[in-house]
Amino acid sequence: MFHFSCPTMFAYMPQEASSLSIFLAQVLGSYLFLVFLAILLHHQRHKKTMNEFLTNHALLTLSGGFGILFGLLIVAAHNLWISEWPVLITLIGWVTLLQGVLRMFFPDAFVKLVKEMMLKSGYLVWCWIWFVVGLYLMSVGFGFAPNG
Image (cartoon, rainbow, N blue to C red; front, side, top):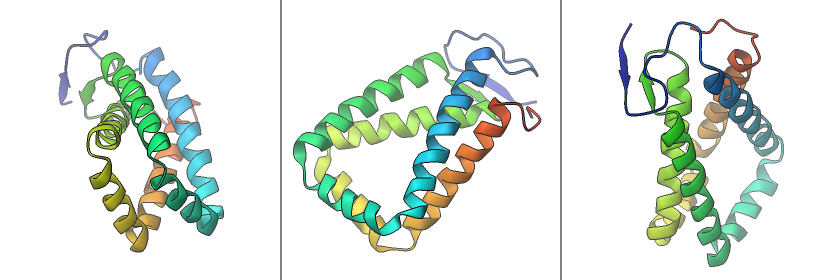
């Protein structure tokens, strides 16, 4: 088993996932599942909401700050680079942190990237990917799937 861990509160990730990994899988999995289910079911309404959001500088900045905060919390507590499912939580932390930084420091580039993505079919592909990741994390977090 490949195992690389950056400085974190876990020195070793055994076969049985840590309680933090399980907790984060439950929370993040449920969040991703519910949010992207709503987006997939109400696709046109979400696109309209996103277009309004992208023109509101205050909301963009505020969401960037929260993205940095939540990304740093996940990365600081769960920066595990292993070849098992908990690495998904680490990747979500880094993606969240990167999105927060883009929104705060490069808002024009972030807006352009999101608008371009929303015009292409890649937007729905990403929605489905995050939906499936959420479903998978829920399944391992709540014990419906093997932890490996």
